[in-house]
Structure formats: structure tokens, C-alpha cells
Length: 236
Image 1 (cartoon, one colour):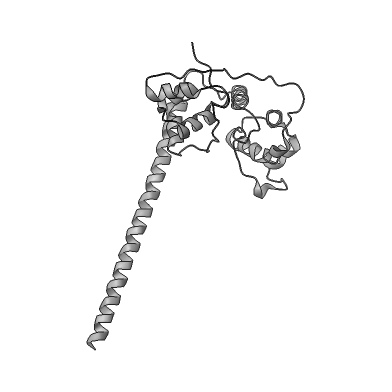
Image 2: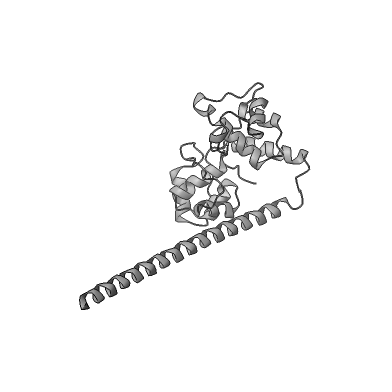
């Protein structure tokens, strides 16, 4: 029987990577993620940095359970308290005042990363109006220069499950789902993304190293010329 995943699997995995000595396999299994996703978090290669969510505070794990996993790499973490599914009631979503300024960033992220999601679905998920979504989509929003696309889950505007459900529904409606090869394709995409990001990082490190060597060589040459000039001046 498949174990229930944490309420916010990516954020939980990020916390476990940063705060425990659990293996990537243990974290991936507990959070219901692919091990490459966990590896990318550990290497800071994830497309967006997730804000960690403490599963101990939420009651999904205990420190004793984490210690068991740290002591035995083959141990499978057990969910202590399954997350509660909160059913949405009809009507607009309430967003705390402190989060309302983040709505445009979350909307921009959905528009950029999931163009298959309709404005009506975005409005229901984020709790906003179609006029706002349209203004962000056509870049006529009054504050467009300050809007930065950010994951609405990490902003606290919706849960990962709500976002995943709408993405799946929109993809199915748009005919984008691939029942036979979806998992394989996603796996290949993740591998390709991680390899691409690693290549970019290695190239940047190489360029930085070459620049440092060139600077060192230039400094040595300048010092040599100065010494030769001083020696020539002394002889004269």
C-alpha cells in the first residue's frame, strides 16, 4: 500500500535535505518524489528554491522517526499523522492581507509555467479576478515592472495538491496528458534539466577560473615590468 505523501512534498523534502542526514532515497520515498528532484534540491539546481516546511512541527514526522532513518539508510520513514484534506467551500478564496501583495507574482508564475490553465481556474486557485489575470498576461498591469514570477505554493497562496490537481485537469482538457509515457518523459526531462544546469555551472566555474588565471598572469607580468624598470633606472 502506497504511503500518503506530506501535505507539501517539495517544501518538506527541502527541509529534510537542509536539516537532517537522511539519504536522498529516504527523503524521496517519504515525500513521494523522484530522487533526482531531491538531488537537485541538495545541489541548489532546482528551478525555484522551495521554502522548507518542518514535518515535525506539522506532526507528520517525529524526531525519533528521523533519528531511526539517520541510523539506518535502509529504513523507510513512517508518516505519523496523515495530512488532512481540506475541501474548498464555494465562493472566493480568502487570502490573508499579508499575502495579497504576492498574488500577482503567483499569477505570473502560473501563466509562464502552465499556459494550459484557464483564467477561470487561476482565479479560483489564487482568489483573484479575471481583469487582474488579463492585465498580467498582456503586461498592462500597473505594477508589471515589479512583478516576479514565483511559485504560488511557496508563497502560501495555495497548496501543492490544489496546484497539481488543476494542472492535471487543465492538461487533460487540453489533450496534453500522455498516459503511457508521462512518467518516463518527466524522468527524462528532469535528467536533462539537471545535466543542463550542471553543465552551465561547470562552464561558469571554468570561465571564472580562467579569468582568475589571466588576472594572476597580468599581475605577475606587471610586477616583472615594474622590477625591470626599477632595475634599469638604477643602472642609469
